[in-house]
Image 1 (tube, helix red, strand yellow):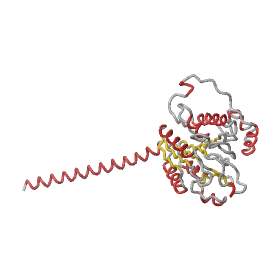
Image 2 (tube, one colour; image 1 turned 90 degrees about the vertical axis):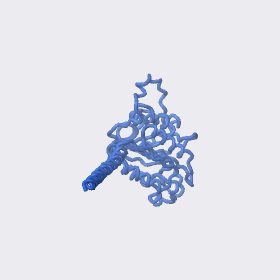
Image 3 (cartoon, helix red, strand yellow; image 1 turned 90 degrees about the horizontal axis):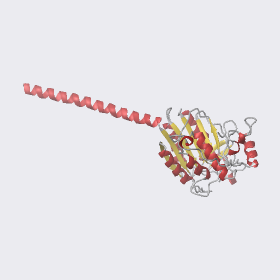
Length: 321
């Protein structure tokens, strides 16, 4: 009798300990899952898209541009989602998933290379399967950039950056009479910096080499240690203006309130003596007049003489920094 009671007590103890162990393990799994989500929200997140396989006016470089930028960003500690030659459905899912993952402690970076166009003052990114035959079809077939940027801003991320190498020739220009060239000027939402491959209303060069002119310059400078994103983009602008003989002037609109250092470490100036600075690239007067006319003055100082003079720095209001 006593033996049976002892065995019963032993079984009861085992069941109690097993139940407690399962409860502890369950709590640990939940905690790890929550920590994983928190870590993703607090990290560096990037969405990189390169579209070149268009039926009309395909582009040679965007897929290469996207792959190279994605590799650089991974080396800089970003968790990267890469899409190349994406259709409309894939782009919409990628943008939605990217925005959903951004949080108050995260840094978000969007890079897009491919065709982009403006319709009635709004900017659109063009999927490779878009059938755009009119302005009305653009709204249905393309991705509204303004909505994407608004979603990024609403995430409350500490810093958001959008880099757009998307001002190539409009492949649908013949079917869209009166369509304005390039992308339209916009004011970046709070906490966001938008970088364009060229000034509003102008065209960017796809480049003769492996990468577009703008992205090639970006790849040369994006991992320089100790530079804020604004300083990286200034160096990119100087390279592009020089390489294009002043015909292409990269542009930024910024409402950032935080700092973003893409690469850690001492600044270039601290790491080594500064080399002799090359002559400032010259922006042709005709280009200055055209861009000033499209963007409008924000003060009595011309946009091309603010914060960098002939280097292409400065812009109206939130223009180049």
